[in-house]
Image (tube, rainbow, N blue to C red; front, side, top):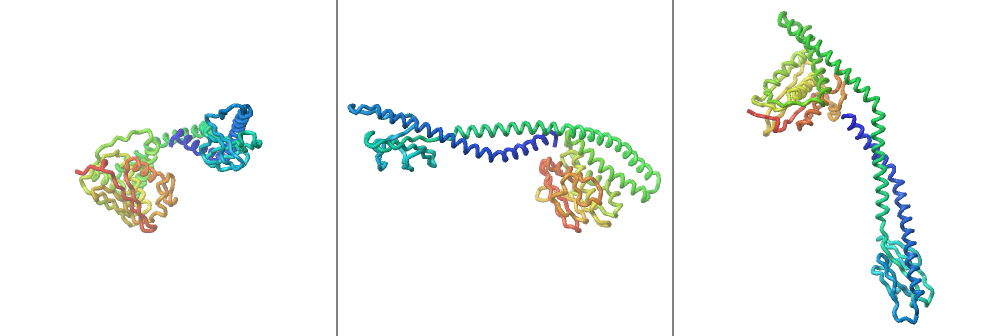
Length: 388
């Protein structure tokens, strides 16, 4: 995960937490604003009721026709003592017949005003009604919430990047140190391997040289993992056609001396005529880490079975060992995780394998029983497999 992705991820988490914390006060603010809006609406209804009363006050009894006031967004009506309509423009049913201001569940607002007796066309009550909308309140609250979220997110990004600057510089220094160290390790490691091979050609093989060669190969596998881990984000992995018979046999032969240190036998059953269209380095990391781990966690004088086969028109590559097994198969792909620290290593091999197979859509199933062994089965997609 790069620095920008890291900062963005945690800024988003922080913003979400702050937003959740602010939801409570925003909720109370929303209730408060709705109450304020309702009070303002009550004042509007009172204003309209006063206009209607004023209009009726100004009516001349000698006139034969009275023009009752009408409003675009307000409805009103005159009612008798039993709340029977004398004249009404209100189309909906009134739920509350009690003097004062009322608001029902449908946001219909009513103002019921008591009138002087026998003064306004025999009416005892004036009712003014409108529909109250809280859209403005909701828009304001959402605008506030959105502004807070954006502001907190921007500030989170800024502060996270500011706080992370010293660590970025330290990580860059550490990365450069590791890269330089890897380069320095590669040269003497190559010299050791070449000279062991030259010695074995000129002299009889002995157990000491075999152990040195096996140890050098273990170190080479660790080096290759570290090298891949450092460079894989910046490299483009070219694909090529790989003869799996030759490639697997070569890797089995490579690790045979390492297995011999524990008297472990590497047994391979490889179906011929299978080619993989993928990058050699990525394929080697998958195979090497599985064989290396199988050797590391197998009991002495046991065997490791490596099979490449076709089943139900799908291609499978499996690695089976008879060793200590795995307690928790869900954790073994986490970087730096080691189930048994006494076995050595850095806990990066299977993490690299997981990143490769996820990228290439290679399916993996793991079967394991403690003290009985483990089996890793890889199912390769059709676009990788070429069968001749």
